[in-house]
Length: 278
Image 1 (cartoon, one colour):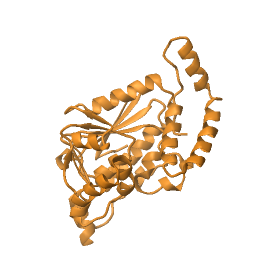
Image 2 (cartoon, one colour; image 1 turned 45 degrees about the vertical axis):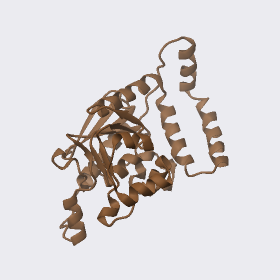
Image 3 (cartoon, rainbow, N blue to C red; image 1 turned 180 degrees about the vertical axis):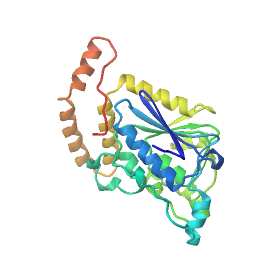
Image 4 (cartoon, one colour; image 1 turned 90 degrees about the horizontal axis):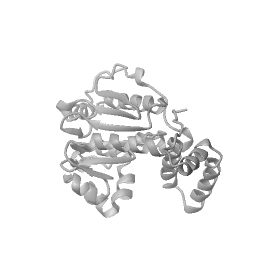
């Protein structure tokens, strides 16, 4: 594909998507958002890919939507919309249900782990996007802000749903109301960063994490566990346990269960089957 605002690379078992507008700290454009979605669909369908890492080129991860684009939207001066139909694609597990069909919720339906490797500025829409990925490897010097209140906006794209689940309601309101800047170390203390790493190490650490789980864990188990965690956030305990019991029964009939037991008994690495987006 003719990507202009991202780079997409696969090195078995990792797909890496690099937001590639370093002169703008990788601020989102409508093209970049379309390209990212298309690249995620490609990674989901590729059996060589066990996990996906998203990072930023240069000094930033993503500070939100490009301010020039926002100014055009606010003034009604956007001009003709760019034709991005070449990036239209189907992705994700539709069985996850309608709760995940709005905004960045689609990230939770993709059948493979998605890790944000946050190497710099991460704010506004960029933060909303990162919160919807599965894990966040964050460099100590990375700078965060919700930014919305200072732009006359509200907590956008699921931030009001995910932020309190990660950091608690009080911390979420503080970050949303004040839009104050905070670094990677505070992000880790608050629970927003799942892994804290040194400067320049977020992408390589996230890629190594994918290699480790690819070597030891069933890709099908990773897929089902991801679905369990996100679906069960919206369920009460009883239905969540019923669904878990049903899916556990299905897992006992799969080849991966046999391979997992045999590899343990034989004291060898498991040879689990890879999955595509089918």
